[in-house]
Image (cartoon, rainbow, N blue to C red; front, side, top):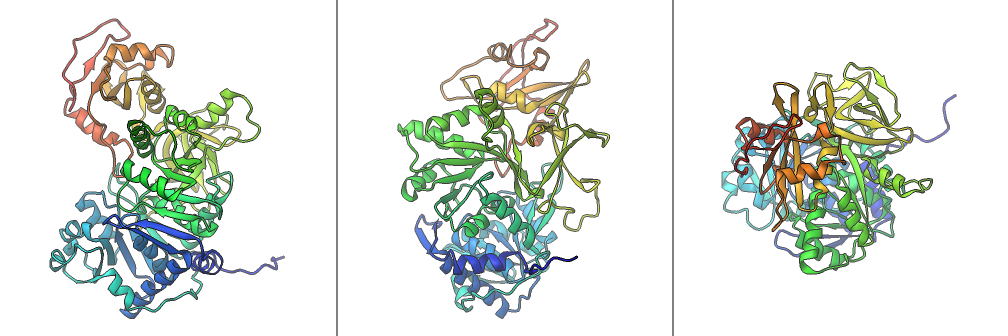
Length: 556
């Protein structure tokens, strides 16, 4: 028997109709490149998104056209986020922090025909625009484009002038929910970036998941500040969730500087925020430097993209702000697990255990643990293997890539090593490519980094594997100390005694001013390994056999 239910299409057309007709009074505040504050309602956003779609249609860009963006978290970018896919075209968000060669590769691979960009990105784009065979139109946002525009091998037009060519459109037609809506590319840390094409259905379902109380829990009573670039993993899906919930939205523009974020928080009073740990660590440092003890009305921060130090969680708790760790990836539409604490957790130890996990898998997705030979391991919180995941907002393939090595029996191989317990909590121990196997046993670099970071003088740390004649691999630590703090390698080794297994403790240490990071704020261990291959001047300390060598110069 078939159901009696209507089979209406899920997707961005439905979302825009709802945002306009039901949540039309909710507001968006954004910051321009010139630092100006711009406010608009959801209804006004929908009308401008309609103008953009109609203008593209009038210029002969039909459904299926790929529109690239090189832009910050601005209202124009958000309008493209909605108007392009809701009209049957496909949006491709390009990471503005990638190298020009990578940007050119993904723009060509995605078949971009139109590119919408902030004027400050135009010069860099002009350097590779000639490599895009299908490029026909460049749309500039901002006032600094005139001198560079002649270098682009196609027509250029100001964004507002393009919108003036279109009529406001609010009656969005339904689109097959399985059609591609937005393309995002992976960071390319292990090779060339790979494209993931999100469907209208997957975007809708993930946005619904974010709105649930077990996830971020957005509602029309909230105001959201996503300190997340819109080009990064579909903006974590947060803009769509805000539109769905009728939650006010604060867009920080191109700057994620802590002073700018604090000013936004004080002026606009968001209740919920999100971003990578480095951003919120920088905000905390800025607060301390200025003697601030409060952060507006902010009550919770969803933090992901890298391991969240438990000390950072405690520091924000002292401010009355709940910081929860989230986990996801480009292939899973971002947030797939979030470390909310269930009601049945009563002891302080169990609360700490929940908070230190990557999160509890959200409803709609399934996770399992597999060993390196493909056998499924128990979800007992003990067995360590590769985390694998499946669900309706998890990719089953990459854009124009036939290789299916990323799948195993229909499950996505995440490349993360860790455990899953009987309550669905995921705890990562390492990236598969970053894992350290010493004497046949795994040393989890994330846990070791967390233990080193707990030293009061340590600001940041990265742990990598270095070759060892006897043990095959040994851990090496690259450390950033806090300003005006000192700590020697022997002192850090001593700090680790009793906190981790003795055989985990590194003999190799280097001290530097900053840890290399990727364009989205993750520790760039690929780059660190490259530097290590060029002979980092390690400081060697007494090893487990009692030998020692003298200290070497610091890495810079």
